[in-house]
Structures are given as C-alpha cells and as structure tokens.
Length: 121
Image (cartoon, rainbow, N blue to C red; front, side):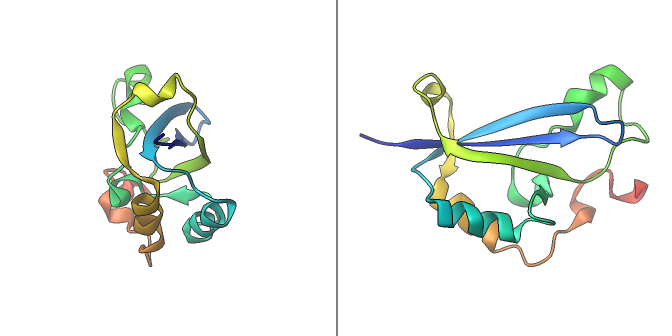
C-alpha cells in the first residue's frame, strides 16, 4: 500500500489574516526528516513559496483587499507535515516526501526577490 503525507502551510499577512494550503506528498516522513526540514526554514518555520515551487497563497487574501496591500510580505509559514487521511489521498500528488524535503534542505539562502512583495519590505 502506498502511503502519503500532507504538508500544511499558511500565509499570514501583517494584519494576521490567514490563507491555508496543503500539498499531498507520496511517502511518509520520519520525525528526524521533519526536524531536518524545520532546521532549514527561516526561524524554523518560514519559507518563500516560490523558491520551493509551492503555490503561493497571497491571492486568497487579495479577494478581501481588492489586490495586494501594504500588509503583504514574502513569507509563508510551515504548519505541519503529517500522514494523510483516507479522504485526502484523492488529491493530486505534488511530489514525493523525500524529494520535497531534499528541495527544502538544498536552500542555502531564502531569496525574497522571488516573491512579488519583496520590494514592500
């Protein structure tokens, strides 16, 4: 049986409005692999979605502000990496959990210029 994981993340603007996203990943991550992922994130939780090829979540909040606002910034937040439930397994698979963690671990410096909001900082 193939096992799957879910990577849950969010975008929280400066006013603390949140948009949530998740990615279905093939395979399961060990607690050591999850810790290795956290170590590579800015302050153990922040990342640039565009740098990892993850769908950014900014636009989810733009529908309330009629587009980008002064509250937007470049960082998304890692929430959890956990086993998928049976209901979640039907979603499209984004990547394997091993390849995804390797991609995060390969980042040496988070590149804020990849976000459309980097000039606002």
